Every structure is written in C-alpha cells, then in structure tokens.
Image (tube, rainbow, N blue to C red; front, side, top):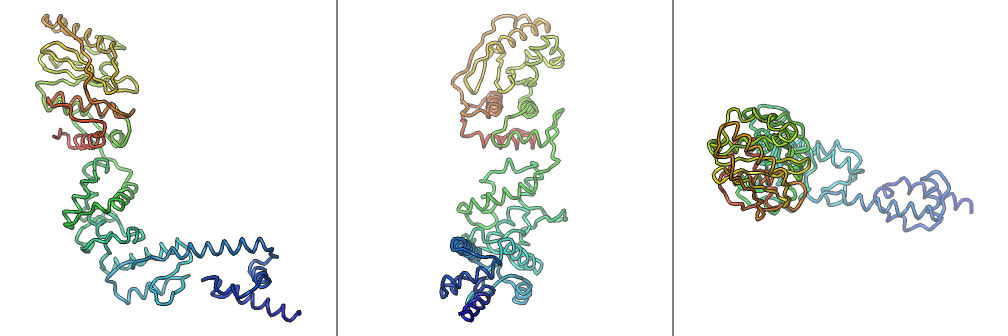
Length: 428
C-alpha cells in the first residue's frame, strides 16, 4: 500500500511539472481524485481540499482559454526574408510551437506585444512592406510602427504601397511631413480636422473608399492626438493673440471665451470695414460699471454714425447674447439663442447712443430710436453653444446672409470658425 502511494505521488510530480501542465488539461482526465490531490500538494506545496482543488482547476482552465485567444489570426507582416524572420523567431522566449501552425502561444499578453513590435521593427529596418492598415496609416499621419497589427483583421485594402511612398517625420528628422503633421503645423491641433477630410485624403492616395473603416481611422487619429497634446501654437492678428488654450474652447462642448469672440469680430469687421463696427466683448461690462466716461475713448477714431450696422456682444457671466444697431432706421435689436430678452442691456445701449450723438454733435440721432426682439431665429438645444450662435449671427448679419443653420450644424461651425481664426479670414 505504501509503495503504491509512492508510485502515485511520483506520477503526480512528473505530471505537475510536465509540458501538459502548461499546455492543457487533457492528461488530468486519466487520474482520480487522490492523484489530483497529490499533484496539487506537490505543485502548491501545501495540503489541499476538494473545494480548493476545484477552484484551482477552474482558474487554470479559464487562464488557458484566455491564453488561446491571444493567438493572432494573421501574419504580422508580409514579404519578409525568411532569414530575418528565423533570426527574430529564434530569439523569442516562453512560447510553444503548435503542430501544423505558424502561430505561437505567448506566456502573457505583454510578451506577445513585445514580440510583434520586435518583428515590425526588424521588418522596417530591412525595407520590407507593411500590411494593409499600416500602409493606410502612413498615408494619413506620422505614426511610428510601434503598435500590434491585426486590430482590424478582415479589412485589408486592395493596394499595399510601401511606407516610403508616403514620407513621414520621425523624431524631428528633415523629411516631408505626413497629412496629420501638416494639419498640426497649420492649425496647432486636429480640432478642425473632419472625418470627411481624412476620407478624402485616403481616397486621393489609394483611389479607394475607406468609409467602411471609420472606427480604425478614428482610433488612430485619437492616438496621434494623444501623442501631440502639447503645442506652442499661437495666432496673431492686429492686436489680438490666441494660444492653444483659447482655441481649445472651440473643441467639443466648451464655452467660447472673450479672446475668440473678439478676434472673430475683428475678422468680420475687416471683411466689411466701411459697413460694420464690432464692439469689444468687454464694452457693455465697462459701460455698466463706469458709465459713458469709461468707454468714451473706445470710439475716438471711429464715427459710429457713418456705419450701417453695429454689433455688440453681451456676456453675462455664463451666457452670450447679441445686440445689433441698424443706423439707417434707428432700430436696436436683441438676439438670443435661448429666447431670453435682457431689457436692461438694450436700454443701456440706447442711452449710450444718445450720449454719443450729443458728444459727436449728431442731433439727427437724438430721437426716433426703437427696440425690437428677434424671435424667429435658430435656437440652441444645449448649454454650451451660445457663443457659437452669437458669432454665426454676427457673420450672417454682416454679410447679409440668411440664418440657415441649426443646432445640428454647430460641430461643423466650430471647426469652420477654428480654421477662419487660424487663417485670419472668413470662409464661405
């Protein structure tokens, strides 16, 4: 009896440290409960119970099932020399070769990623071609070959151009920048870049429609943006200066700040210089706190009564509105994207115009003023786009364009305003 137990114990030791322990559970089915107990005792170094044994088996089985999913379903790269592949494969550790298969099982997800990166690096140094999606990526942006391929299996382009066909910029080397690098250089970020721009670029390069691969493209653009967050990009126009913090207010659902409002108003005013005058966003606040004498010098070089339209943005802490003055018919209008009417703001502007007419000796503007609230205008459906609506109101009124926009157009309008500020000109 003692000899038989000793034999069982030795078999358990042999099985516990054999290859079957690392590759599967098939061998364990031949043994009974006592043999399992011996194996666990030898493997774990402590007494085992039936419940502990079951937990250990379930955990091990789940680990092996997860391990099998790490096997890639496609080769990492194509057209590589067999000698280079053999050299790289021989240096990899902790893997078991399967029968009738070219794939390998890695001992961990991290090791698999390192293996793929090493193979990609070797292929790149030997001037090999990348597969499918990586070539698409080279056409779009400056993206180094440092992530695992196969994220978009089954979505291979018909063409497989070499990476050298689309020069990219690595570590500041003097090479032609990629598409995303050009956007970053021109605009300081990828905020004004739309999905349509990227798909159009890919179609021009590959002569193929990539609309069915939008998730992959968006993911890689997001990764590129994460690696290029810090930028010293600035815009100077007349007396205005915008940095990345100012331009970032045009991204997503952020609130526009005074710098963006004032510089865009300057662009509108310069587009029609003899017709429109745009007041600084701090004008109304200064008028309320210090009266007419506090803003008297603001129009020292400007005759307001020779203009056709006055645009006065109103900022009341957390909301933007717009007051317009039509000099031809002496009408003061109030525009608000939430349908609010601040009567005291309109009254402040009316009193200012009367005082300005007396100071500038223009008696014809001392009477006949009327106020109006414009209601049939596009309205916002959130709490963050009031500033964008004000700028769109200003542009349409200055250029005499109809209000043909809505809340659904605001993401596109934000991107257009961003481009206009960077290029210092209004676009159609």
